[in-house]
Length: 147
Ligand code: FES
Image 1 (cartoon, rainbow, N blue to C red):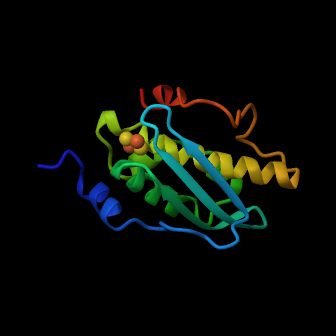
Image 2 (image 1 turned 120 degrees about the vertical axis):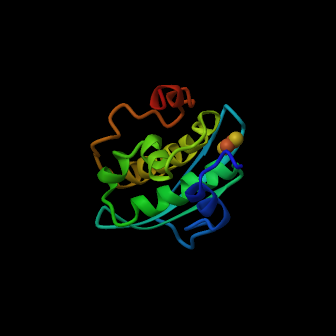
């Protein structure tokens, strides 16, 4: 028996939105201090709506599965709607991850936030959800999110 449910396995085996994006409007990459893995999220943005999202990762299967659902979930959403998602939303959408793997879903959350932060900086936008966001923060937030 796998410790992962079928939906997680499906997104791991057939990840949605994996790969490189040509001419993205925003990119965010985040490295996990827990495991050392990396995630990069690239976005296409039109009128403050995310019209496309892609990810590339050196992360594990759980990082792949959570980024796969995360990119699906943020497509078609406004930047502020996307900022409202936490890694727990991605884990819930997957139907759960084993507790030791929950931190892997933080890579997607943080890389998405960073991409949107970079975009907001570049375009002089003030977005709800970015107040107090520290682009250099470490990932201790993951202990808060999954308790
Ligand atoms: Fe590093 Fe999962 S163990 S992302």
